[in-house]
Image 1: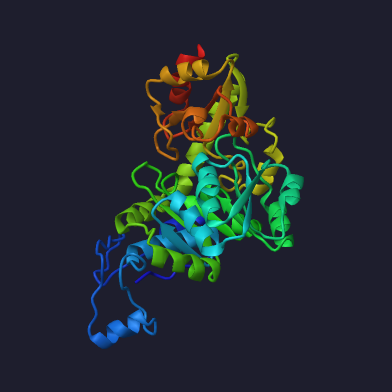
Image 2: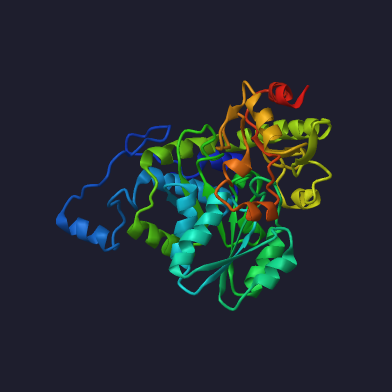
Length: 403
């Protein structure tokens, strides 16, 4: 049984104490319920649980104590009524769309979404009659201009991948609600430790738990967070029937990851700020994309929209730093190939710093023209700052940048 918690607790306390699963064995650290099904005392009890007239677990595709504990803890951190965990971040977005949209509906989405999200909207949902219009993420007039009578969903990442552009969640929520649509925010880059979109007016939040919620690059998973009706009933109903469920083991890893989320995110942010400032002063770097820099176009919005690192501390700006080198793909690849400590991989949110070339990896399947319109050029490099000493991260990047 999950122990009761106070929703008024601070974020760090909720990450450690919210929805603590505890069995009759009274374990202090959460147990893993690695079982596909659950048994009943009688045929009558089985019938009652299946009929939902009596609470109980049935089958781990949709009822598992470990998965439920992760869902409840993440919902508590986001200030939400409900959470549905899924097999991956992309399956979370698909589950949201399939549960809440139908043929003939329309999505307005930011042009600078993660590459797989763009492909999902363009190449999968379109086959089911759901059309998407992509707009400049930071242009509210563009969002308004793309609205149609059949628009049902506005979808954005903030900060986005990989340019760290922000959308004004509160203002975009007003645009969505004025059109009778929902606003979904991908909160992968900041997590609820640094940003809580629902409190700013968003209706739905999606996560790739694979990233910072895990924090060590171990497991793949996702989540949809929101209210009791849309998420607790509609999204859950699709997940139960279609089956894009999270495994109990992965849920346990994420549950434990949430315990250190706040501490880790503060460390990521501090090192990323130091790296961004060093890159901005480097003669081989043409431009740095990081909301913590005063010349970032949405720096003031970040200060207003993001949470603080701690009492009396500065605003949180995230752990992702992207930068452009002088030249093109060859020069960017030269910088990446020169690193000896940093991991060359497209994943992020790890304890280990990672580096990638978005135009040829995460956004490589997007047509070149669409990449150019989104500002993802051949000279762009993305660094997901880990938990190593910032001085060592800087020294490793300096190899390819020339000191």
